[in-house]
Length: 240
Image (tube, rainbow, N blue to C red; front, top):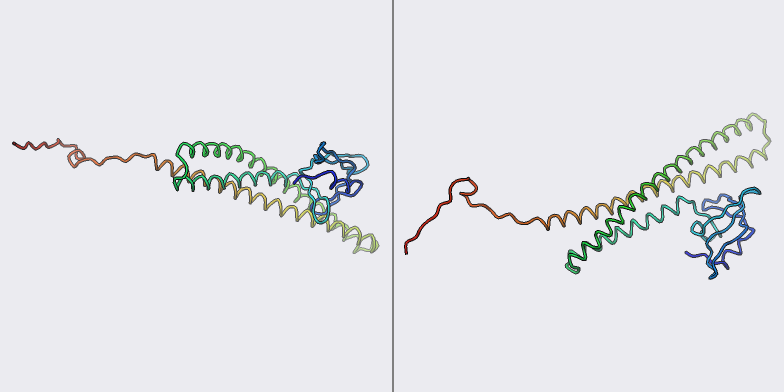
């Protein structure tokens, strides 16, 4: 989905949140082409750090402009490509089975899809490694938050922290933990989806290879009983 300048400008000076509701910063500028298509925005994460975020990581939802995690953008792209290859392989096999395409065209398209699948498997491997690293980071983040919550609860229960600041702090910590848990679940789902799509596409290639291999094996003529036993061939002469 392309974002246009007239849509994004209304968010200038406004807070930017990610799809989990976490505050990222403030939108301070927008970069667009001459046709008005936005290619990136500038975000001030605090008064010292400014970051340029590409438009592919942005989404317009019912809650307004939202930031997509980098891992999610990458995962969706790989999933889309894997699904396309899987569907094209299925369509190719179906058309060839029905005799609607010639053998040379079948081989040509299959070779291209096989090469594309090789490239996708490398990208999928890298993506899954990135997703697993993100999941590990989120697990560590959850542990860190829970430690902070534990110390806060102990101090509050001991009567060292008043009610109002305690409630304010504990609510923020609970929100942070919940968003980290939600993101972790999404990461796990996308790891499983990539593996599922990759496996299905590979199976399509293997099925096609098995069918093609079976079609190319020539029939072996049966030997006579004498040839099979290794004995001499008997010739019968008939007088005219």
